[in-house]
Image (cartoon, rainbow, N blue to C red; front, side, top):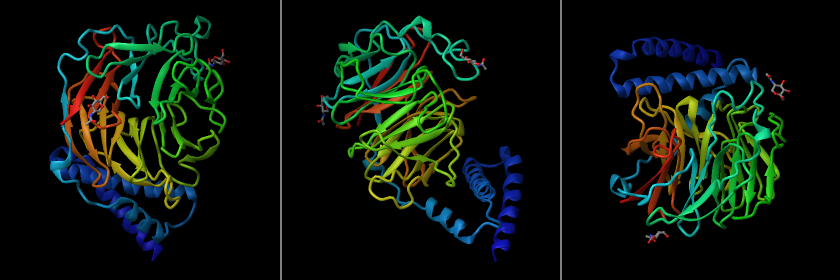
Length: 390
Ligand SMILES: *[C@@H]1O[C@H](CO)[C@@H](O)[C@H](O)[C@H]1NC(C)=O
Ligand SMILES: *[C@@H]1O[C@H](CO)[C@@H](O)[C@H](O)[C@H]1NC(C)=O
């Protein structure tokens, strides 16, 4: 029985592969189906090989099926908000460096994290991921600015002489700042305007893949329970989950689980669904494993995967209730824009916006505004966009 199932899968795989060769003749819908099917079969086989169970158990196939059909209920169109661009915001232009991250504080102020005069290029790291420019010291300018939601004007700033190559920033419900620096290979928790962190994860300037090291960590998501997740990141392509005190609870994936991530670039929590949605950038998908905040059942297992041909490389994700807003980045010929995603039906249910190099996205706490930041090449292209959710 097991053998037959596996042979059937192999046959299916070759059929899917044949179809994939002739993709140009297929309508978009079936292309999408075939690619997803192909991916599923490939993942199953890879998992079977990795766990060295021969042949694949029927329970694996069943488990996969269960993972896929996560409350397959689409959200009614009328309840899906549409992001509408706020023209002439900010009213006065900023002179930020690359705006690598945006978050919104509990008062509803958008807050940006930027690189000032630093650019991440071929001279930034050597082949062992060691940062080349430590002797230049940290960025002297303020790297964090709190903006006025109405005008976009700078209200206050901090974060000078602290960071080397800013990447991710999240502000939790208590107003704590959670930050990643790819050069330092560390993640931090700060009280705002404090230069001493409350919590440090990773070893300063020392990349690694042990549970004590990070390597170019990208993003942090904090649950209302205080548990937090670090996307680690460019080299390790894993997620680490910690309790509120900073004790490591698990990694995602955790062997022998199979979830192949390729540059998890941003993460966001959908607490009601108990999902952690990941911008799995180089896999060109958003994948949402169970976060395990409410129940450990199925924790770490992908419960939803959104992978459609127009999605491209996904740079930013931000939860809005049970939905996810996402931005992609330059990918071949695909338009660079915003997406509204429904993880329950595993579908893209809206497109909006037009960008060049978007890097981060955040929805305000009361859900009235959405911000997107870009990492450009000058003060005009390093910028923040505001959208209202109508
Ligand atoms: C949401 O927060 C913003 C910024 O604080 C405020 O201006 C707006 O009135 C709030 N909207 C709602 C619906 O509460
Ligand atoms: C990167 O730099 C570190 C520190 O200078 C050095 O130990 C390491 O060998 C370098 N790696 C490569 C591949 O050059």
